[in-house]
Length: 212
Image (cartoon, rainbow, N blue to C red; front, side, top):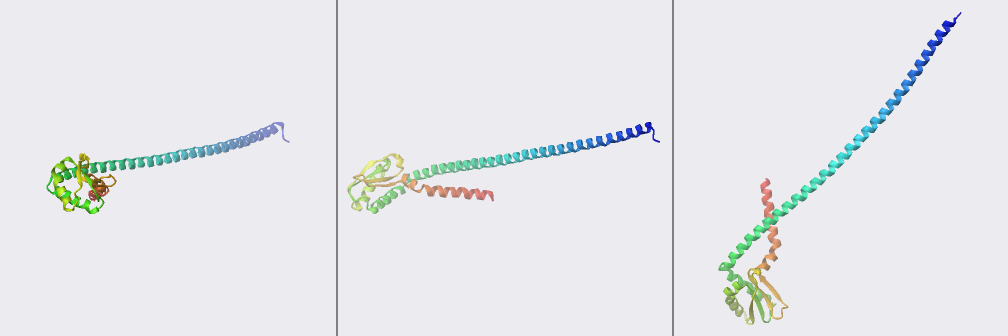
């Protein structure tokens, strides 16, 4: 027969075991809840970290593109500045050569050739005016008159032009309706695109040779 003490002992064991099972179950549940929260937190942290990295990469990429564009613009500006300086130096040199030509004996023949070109256009049929620099008028007006007489053009007068025309002359009919520009300044302006193209091609060719 089971005594009360034995029953109490058995009940105590059952109670302890029950408490142990419930405790373990509760602990297991808490552990799973903790692990789930830890997993979600870890995922959230990883996602945030990934987002930060992605934002950083995009920002870095945008900054890189911006920097490259700035470098390109700056390089282009520097290249244009160099081209302008080369053009300015070249034009200064060219003007010196033109001035030397105007001072040479060949210049008189050049003026006569330009007069023949003017006559050949047959645009100035009546009297006309030739605008020349004071220097050219003093030195070459007689030669030009003789050339005009050879072609039967007698009604020609001379007026002074400022030195901005550099050399040559400008012909204008009496009514001022026809104007033919044979000045050296006009010659330079008309040929400026060709001058620039030739100069810049030479610069680029020099850069290519320097890189080889």
